[in-house]
Image (tube, rainbow, N blue to C red; front, side, top):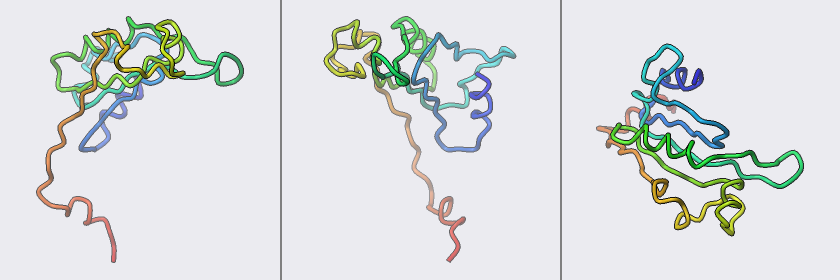
Length: 134
């Protein structure tokens, strides 16, 4: 959560956290000081790790409960959630045909979540063009 606290203070129009690969349970509600971590974020992308059976790119374990906790914790907040994939570990358990476990139709119902943050239109492009020198 230390990195999330640092990212929360970076000036940006859209801030997101990618909890992918998800290799353990995460509590996004509070940081180590008891403050709400995601109040300054707009989007959270979650997914299990993809990889192979052996070698340096072996996939790690992921649990449905870890993903469901994040989805439940963020429900009702301003943070949109996008569940990208189950990952190889869960994909194999769920008998998905793709290595990454990305068959959305085979996701558990609670994890069929693919939300996007609302991007407000800017009044002008000066925001971007002011840093460009001719």
